[in-house]
Image: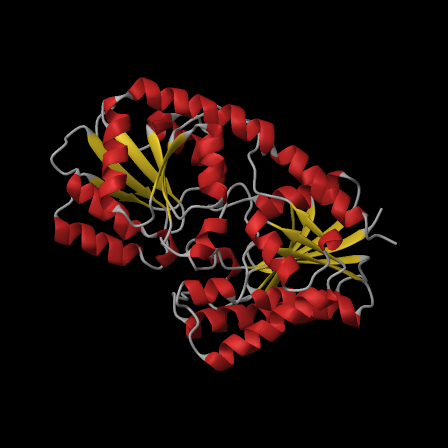
Length: 405
């Protein structure tokens, strides 16, 4: 059995809001008998704040569900601008690096990016400690930063490009989240044989959902179209608000936006300007409560900006939606998620940022709830056949074990 050092700035446990991909993989490594140490941030990415229990402490080491976890300082309250994001990323690496160097010498260092600084950090730790390095790529950088407008300075872009090349050149193996990311990594020069595709997935249900615990300002007869996740620029939720404005005269339909993010305040202000009484905003919820919230939805919303890069996105919420048995209304660029929805027959795909088409799709399912239920059932069948997280986690363990001495 090996000693694994797992570094990711955004490790979410099931009692916190956000995706639990990292935790499931860490848990699978530990269950396979490996000695795992996790280094992550004290700051929750969904709220961009640190829990009160960590106040005044730069690095906290504790056991979480039997896993050795070091939570290092990073700056809080960052926005969607390059300066505050860079401060957050660099501050984490500044405190995570000495923590990583003080751990027992690992057999494998695994770094999960973004942010790209974590990939560089993990690669450097592996280099200095003369051990193997696995890089997980969940988003292509600097490509994603360019697509969202986060990065515009040519010098900064050149620096990030060199950082990515360093990570790729140092990695013994690369794990890619989507087909598009896999293709991008290979195009950057990583040998195809060194790249493994491990998508997001769905956990088998371990608790019963209870939609009665969900608080929405509508009665049980309302048709609820729900978005759950980060309210960021790339999510294009202003398209959802524009669609809601077109649906304002239909009292059957309610739009529920659940989560947090740097654009949430702007979205709330815009909904107020439009007088949208058919839209509600709720805060982020722990991962364990997601099934209950989705059980209250009649359809689920997936939206992205109209940029080619987002055609390669396969977000975790897509699998949560499918696993909940809810039809998906996707206003997204043509690509992997669109192909999966069509292959499963579990929803309606409309062009990205087309509010009229999205409003028509919501109305179509509100008019035919039997069709909505059939689409939801198709999603359950598809996701458990192709994206069972137990199988994906087992593949992850195999990749790690393939580089053990």
